[in-house]
Length: 460
Image (cartoon, rainbow, N blue to C red; front, side, top):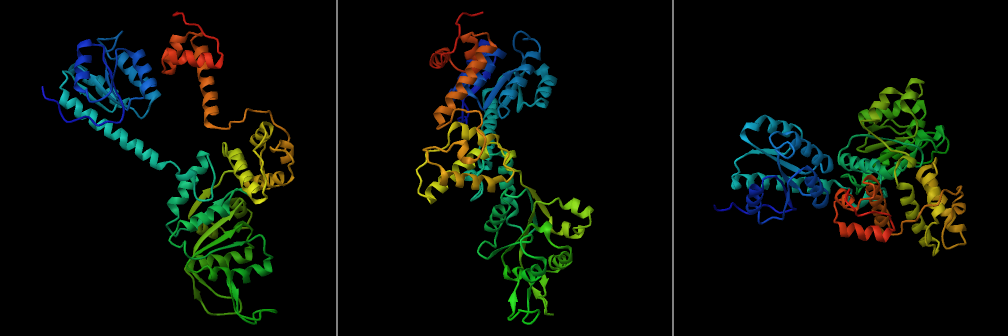
């Protein structure tokens, strides 16, 4: 029988079938692929762990229930638990249609009824391979590019999601409200919103509503005409007008005096400003980004913040997590700041001591990234040793942990832990542990010898 067009590559094909004749037929049908054969659930799971096949064909009638579907369905469930992205094509007899439908409901990609027609099965496998490749590529494209946004250093899932949100909303002119504790990087994200927007070539104008006295804040925002008040010797544009065509960042908007909130609301609604002492209505085209560490809903309840203004500034709200909630970011940022300040102050420090790294991980960082930056800066300036210790950071020493200097060391620690757990689970039996880990016995022997782990080779 002539074969159909070549199967799409991308990984081995696992065939789970207990009939030796069908095993040979299927292997011949896919001789342009690397084909792995498994005859039962246990060997199928070992193959999934070892080869990570993108596509599996699975016979539902596996021993010890060769005449039923319970073993095949259990195998399907465990394959998808191990490798959710795997495309499983269920192969069943015509009388097993209900079981095949049940398998699809349980997560199988497709089903095919015996007797086997290689051309049709190849077509189904081709589609499955192609879909797996597309999904893998889509997942790769959704991974953070360069770690995060320009200027944002993070490895935590929560911050990476925020970076993706920033990328999505930056091109539109919706008013953004950034919520987060002091020092979490609200202005950095506001600048990212500007830099990724169509307004990137225009001005980014920032004003801290909490840093300017109330009697001066109105003139800072809206500007003033000559003679509007004592000392107003010339016409002056306000920050809002100055940001025309660009982005206006109102930091700590929760501290905006109540008397100014109505005037800001009018600007947001009508996009016009009037300078102090003037009557001319000046149109302004500006994208507004606000930020605060205040609980604005509580301020609304207390009568200190206008509810209508809140809804106007929070068309899209982004909550920024505190540094202590960003898994792994404290150490990542510490190394980045160390490199930055070593260059700035011409220092040749080699890193952090293990107790310093532990202290960095365990510290709560109430001042967030700003506290971290100041802490490392001070340590770089003051340290007399080759490495920064916890005392240099002004932190209590933590429990010393091995410092992971490179990927090889990180891999060795992970391998040691995985081998140890597997051997404990099978009472030290190398053969069973190798199957559990999806590696060969010689490979496991090498790891056991390298790490000095106790094991036994007798089959139980």
